[in-house]
Length: 570
Image 1 (cartoon, rainbow, N blue to C red):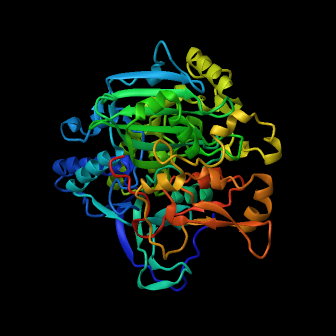
Image 2: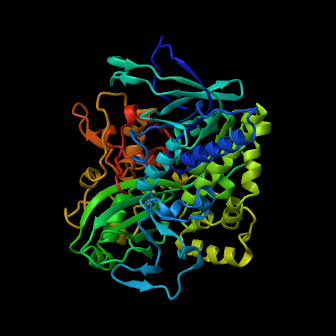
Image 3: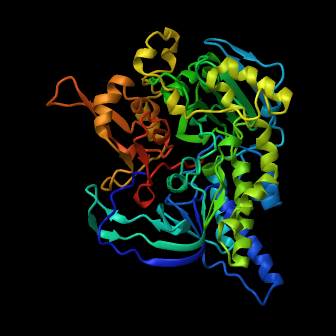
């Protein structure tokens, strides 16, 4: 595991905690709120054995709760009905779903499916802004008495032998040369009985934990997709609030997996985006370009005509399914939400699963505090709770869904039908899978690909009205970082980028990154050669680079001081 070079001779002050939750998304906040509820109920019943909430804290790397939260977002309310039964009376909701439909797109035509497939039926669900929803949920957590530390990222886990004993937060006030500045403040060592990782997809601490304890052993490797999203303001009456449209097909070909969503929101706004599976074979594929080509389809162009973009963002999602979920609890630790892989890739929904997993982790942590025991015997009960819950009831029948698309779109659709007929088994109870980056082909193997792939490879130029290049889109993400700090994107060996990747894969990082973080620039002293240039201040924290780099030499770590995207209203 590659980390930033630590500062030498720095003493980190210690703080004692009972529970530390890392991540202020739906999973982490639900975990904190449920834990508060359990402690309140316990203290009301046991005046002789009180538990305190003062030593429970939640770390969020963003400057404020919700700032880095991005999603579709279509919300299944099942878990919120359990956590806060009256949530609809005060939570920010864009609209209740009033209609849903599926279209298959060719290059110039749209064919509406006669019926909406059951996994895509959304009556009873809600269109929400995950940014606004998480802000509201964060306020509920603070009102419940749980302390939230915003602008504090977990930089590394603390270990004693095989036991996680807490989290070290990031040092602040370090310059690009990794030297302390005048405003330097060392990070804290938060020593905790229970550490709960709710970092979202491809969390950096979760990676540390996984590599130290070999959590992927006997599991399928996790696979991912990246959703690139725009929020538009449209002329009045163009789309109804609560209207949901899914599309499949163009601009992807049968060699890629993915699809689009269009959600009608209130105030004449629409959320639209395209999810591209991060297991495509052509290294020139550019997910941001895919979205721009999607908008040029007549079906979408007509919808957006006369409108204007107001927000942009990107997020990766764990597609691996049930067989890719790691062990969920061990000595001093648990993993929840997207960090663990709780997402139904067939429904393209995970918020409700993240919330439920956070609630079950809270119940496990509460039992550990009462018992005074945070060993694997105690925290391993989290796995048992998940297995006995509706999380497994939902995810187990689709356990082989995404694996079926490894052989292409047509094979994947046939497999989907087979899974529905056989209750999820298909031909095998457990289909194998491969990391997405392993499916990327070298340049010499893709030169014969047909010309109709031009709509998804290379950079989108954009017309500044309907379509946009990456830097123009990036402007609408509200991204900002402190410039004078160590790069939070660590490349283990840049010689590989210059001398191998250029020849073998054409430096795909410059394409798969949706924010123009990676560029190849000429080397003046070596004509004809290029070297990699990083623009870390552009990073929208999607972690596609960490996932899709064919050599696995890029590591994403949290930046200093809450920097990142500003997903207001998304």
